[in-house]
Amino acid sequence: FNHRYQYPWVFLNDEEFTNEFKGLVLLETNTPVYFGLIPKEQWVQPAWIDEGKAEESRHRLKEQNIIYGDSSSYRNMCRFNSGVSLLLPYNLAHPQ
Image 1: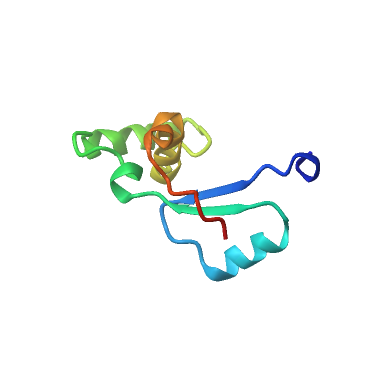
Image 2: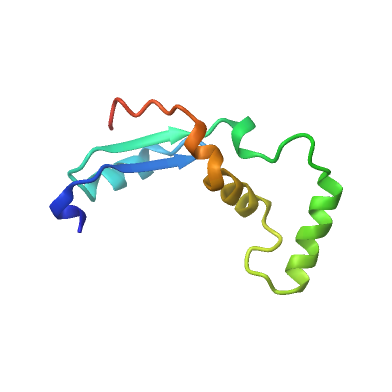
């Protein structure tokens, strides 16, 4: 699909990508590739969330065998992808 349309690849993460990772990705495509760092305050749950209650909820989800139920990182990703990502002005002007 993408070999025909050449859509850019965009990678966002809450930690810097390693140069090794970037290099391996760049070997896989001829399209522009962008790597962005998600600010911590946009990735982690808001300060007004009761972490004790959140932890209890994750524990219950794990007991119910809900996939990724106890993963706070997965919850952060879902929250971010549910809308926060659309509000942030990433500088994608300079591909790698």
